[in-house]
Image (tube, rainbow, N blue to C red; front, side, top):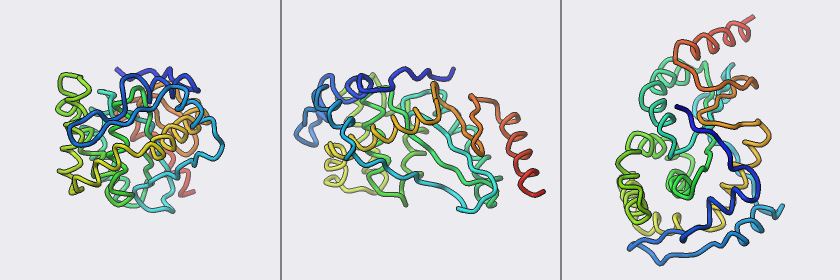
Length: 225
């Protein structure tokens, strides 16, 4: 089942960033962001909206934007079962430019986003794949300490240093930018669930691979005319 999105707006940011601390882990000293600070930060127009990180050729005839959450089980299923076919047959062949946009239902999804972006654009999709394929493992028993420890381990497995992971997980400015970017993009595209796909400007709900393939092929045919 796809996951419904109900956390747009200032209250949403408070729910994502507040509640119990920032990165309470043995690896670093925890920082705290209050609800008021989160709302103020993301309401501040000076908070940078981050650019998309794309995969594939920039001039590909079809652009697929996927809104997904690292804590959404259906998103994890799609990325482990169907994304490899999309990448092999459409992205790697120059037919599709793919953009993943993160959605945050909770602070754990935001923590995962900080890890995904910790290695910069070159490592983003590789770390993202790890987060989706190992989702059940790093979420574990669902406790804050377990999740923070496991995300730290994924960062190390991705080739990041202990210092890099610690700094990224405690980067309040980056977190504010991620939430502000998520809010703007999801609001502009009227996204209310994950996964959601925007294919050449048209929004689609989650679908089986054969249905997605038909849309891609139809758009490719239009582009070739």
